[in-house]
Length: 367
Image (cartoon, rainbow, N blue to C red; front, side):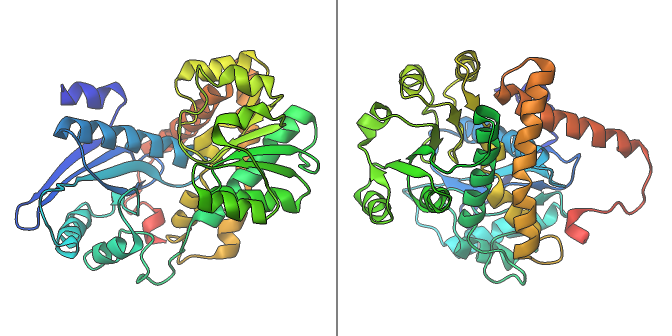
């Protein structure tokens, strides 16, 4: 990999390799853009075939966090850490993650970490022993707790905005909503839309979530038969890439007019976003719709978490989705491209203020 070319292609700011032989720590932190504020991004603890794959993953995820934060209206930049997991080597997680915490502290607030795939609140507690630049720890005063309810609420309000675009009204009463994946977020979403009078058709590959959803009043359909039923809205809330060559025609044939769910990377490829647009369906871009959890975590840095303040911020996902639709119409582009443009325009506008000297610039971390 030509590292500096890779950094230059999408204007990354910093790539940091962290090594601590005693604890077995091999970490890669990528900071993509801090125009809007310090880079916030979780720490992923995962196995990789090689170090280059780990670096590419950190870079891809960091850039995604920049766009997610910017499009959500947060005063945060984008970053990410991956820690390479050696399944053949036994390590003390406390020692290793405390060592990582010291590295994070050394970045002096340019990077704030949180939980991600392979890490937990307990691991965030270990990191907190060494740095305050961590969110989602149970030990830190003003912590925000489980982000799933905020993620589900953000998807709910964003879905309403998409319904307004497609049907002329944001009411979900009487709508048939197909939810793929009724785990932590998907089940909470199902409860919300059913409370408004929607009929939920639920699918999940696991028996436990299916049973719970059925008991709550959802119609259950097998994963292989998802698009054999008619629906108004499709909410992918499990794996990504479910909008692909094999499913797009099925989604259209099922009568679905709106795609709005919690899953990351719902489009298998960008061209599938073009196809959705050509078919006249409304797509609410996933990284804006599922930003409720990020918004909740970010609220910790506003003097301690406030559930009321965080909920008000999550409610604004409705407005952000409407802005995406406005940009799509203004520029004649699909909504997945409009979401990127919303983020890029906000970053460019704020970057222009950086020419004004401020000795002790205010930041989310010193409020």
